[in-house]
Length: 282
Image (cartoon, rainbow, N blue to C red; front, top):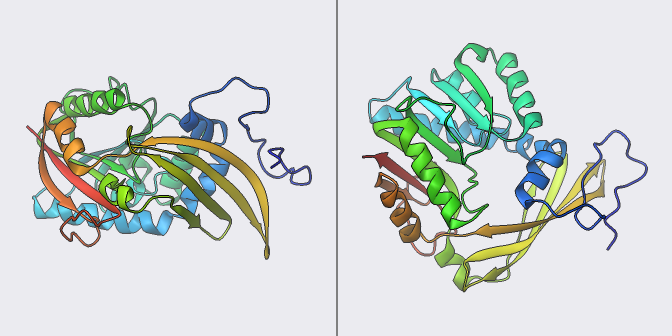
């Protein structure tokens, strides 16, 4: 299969393709930084879902008397959850390591009239030192980036996050893939579809290391046709809830809720393909 970008599509950014002679880079940076203009289309197609997630998170916070609280959205991408939360009256700080996605988020905050309630910072999840201790009531990680690195990196992120969320504050993770389900349903192919883009996710699951290894294939929609835009390798650590809870507890959090999703808040079961977790800072 060719990995060369289409010659007749100059309106699209120049993509970085693994295997084209460049040194190998972290797969997440390859997608979200080097090819951010392409991934922007994925996030644009999920904007409506982001608004729904924002309403669900707001409901959760309102139930705890935390309406209008200070929220850290990490990573924030184009602000598809953080900006709707700002529209609901929350003060939102967004962090992302993609300069392009942050620039899109800034434009959207201005467009939706919430620039005064949204601040954006360029940086890595592994270093939250830009934020003062106990400066947030809640942190969110939606359409999760947990597992994109090593287990040690994930646990370090949880510790960093605990330092900037006040005692009694919350950490909301949504969209986690359930290892228990994957083990019983192997060799899956899934896709994300929007008005402008189709993304095929093909992977195999390494049971011994609990990692999904595969690729995302991007196709641009041009009328009724699809044009291949790039293929990017992925390597994601997938957790069972008990693994994630243990890591969080070692990092200063306690389990406050485990659901099939934030939207339904149905009880989690091993047959749930994905799940949402709410932790409280202790």
